[in-house]
Amino acid sequence: MRKVSFAEFGGPDVLQLIDAEEPHAGPGRIRIAVRAAGVNPVDWRVREGQVLGAHPIELPSGVGLDAAGVVDEVGEGVTGVEVGDRVFGEGSSTYAEFAVLGAWARMPEGLSFEEAAGYPSVVETALRVIREVGVRPGQTLLVSGASGGVGSAVLQIARDRGIRVIGTAGAANQEYLRDLGAVATTYGEGWVERVRRLGEVDAALDLAGSGVIRELVELTGAPEKVVSIADLGAPEFGVRFSGVAGSVPVALAEAVDLIVRGKLHIPVEKSYALTEAAAAHVDSQAGHTRGRRVVVI
Ligand SMILES: NC(=O)c1ccc[n+]([C@@H]2O[C@H](COP(=O)([O-])OP(=O)(O)OC[C@H]3O[C@@H](n4cnc5c(N)ncnc54)[C@H](OP(=O)(O)O)[C@@H]3O)[C@@H](O)[C@H]2O)c1
Image (tube, rainbow, N blue to C red; front, side, top):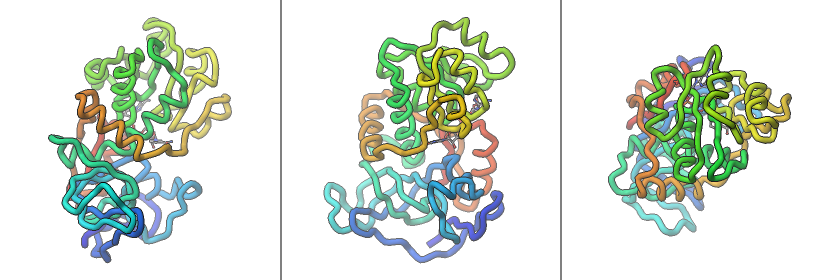
């Protein structure tokens, strides 16, 4: 089968499309014929060798966590899913024709593979950070970096729970944030004052890692009211860095519920062929993805 792989850590040009042995579903796992794979920043962080500590990587390595496709092997002990089912979930080496998933859910009717591939990691992360920051219905949550994949999920989950959101994004994404129910303002020069003018903030999330932890603590009044997923320096300010994934099956079940109720839609910014994985990484690394990018197979 065709699979995107890298034999050394480095820039996007280390990615190669190779012929590889097909993987098979071990106990508790399923294999899918991949139709689309989500492109997450962690994919290029792993490719660069940035996340060696958390996930030891053996080279050569495949790329990709999230995928959507059609089940074609069901491992020992797996129940509730059959060959031919359309599923989305998380596994490994998903930029490939076949991939093994460790967590999955049936795709809701009407959802395309392309769109579905963008949900698993971002919804898990969004649910986790909303829980960890402890924001409650009726309160105001400030989200720095609100237009990306995780931000898009946070805004919609917050709206569904009755949490008011103030989001920062680039000028091109102000209308997008408003469409997702947030009060929008731009980041950059003067952003703290612009947020202050929009009202009191009860909790804040740093989703962009743009060096704003001190300001988020000032705006909320306390470090325990702030959580970052993108700034490893956050603990220096007493702020929690959230890096340990929660339950993916729980997140997928919540995603399905929200999608079926029409409360969650994460747009696909752009689709790439398997031969264009390096371009997908270059574009993701540029840091201005609205929603999610996907590789289609
Ligand atoms: N720790 C964890 O568990 C975990 C989990 C998931 C993701 N992450 C990390 O969290 C970050 C966000 O992930 P993602 O998937 O949402 O990324 P993404 O889809 O690539 O989105 C990045 C967003 O950052 C915004 N941005 C760029 N510069 C900014 C600035 N100076 N101020 C505020 N926003 C800015 C962009 O908005 P504009 O286009 O509007 O400029 C863009 O929408 C990544 O660094 C990723 O590696 C960590």
